Length: 222
Image 1 (cartoon, helix red, strand yellow):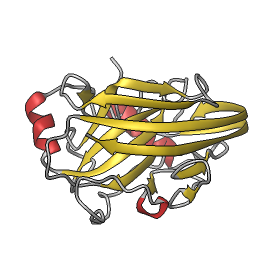
Image 2 (tube, one colour):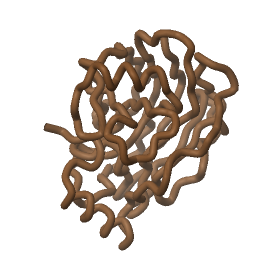
Image 3 (cartoon, rainbow, N blue to C red):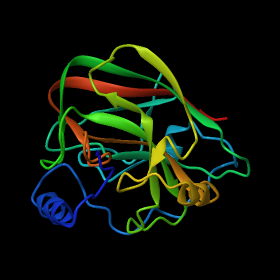
Image 4 (cartoon, rainbow, N blue to C red):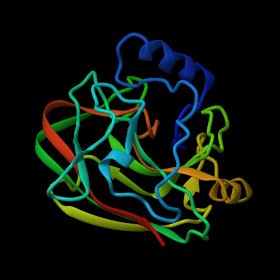
């Protein structure tokens, strides 16, 4: 079973220890800042409204991009990009989410930032509750139906729509819980994507050589 974040106590301790000794994963401290979106039910495409969290060697926000809404360059190892999120609140019932993106690859070789993780490096879509403290396993939910292995379809523009159903989304420890997921959808605070490996969804991805850029073209809910 793939775990989404911190699956076992001994792995948690290992990640914390490695995180303080130079690996790309930066252990969360507290929750997200209390920031409201510009408007409900709309995912902003302004790069300054997106935040890069729990990462090493990264700026606080993506940059404007002529190829799309925004972009960022993957850092070299031992840096790593972990969470890329924007504030989001909804007054509607969410049925699906669509992301359109492109990964521009120039000889890139990807690595996972956490030595306890398993390659290949990935990114996945995330929904995070308002006020998530990184202690509640139901504070964050990842889509299981779309997991992009970095390098697999780079240099192509891809558009993917995934349903917002409890069967497709699992919590921090990889569990599907329809009641907990429904409660989370009523209290959404952040949405976006996380980068990691096959085991830890948000512990970071980086480069060992070459260069690569993630370009977001569109991200919206239906």
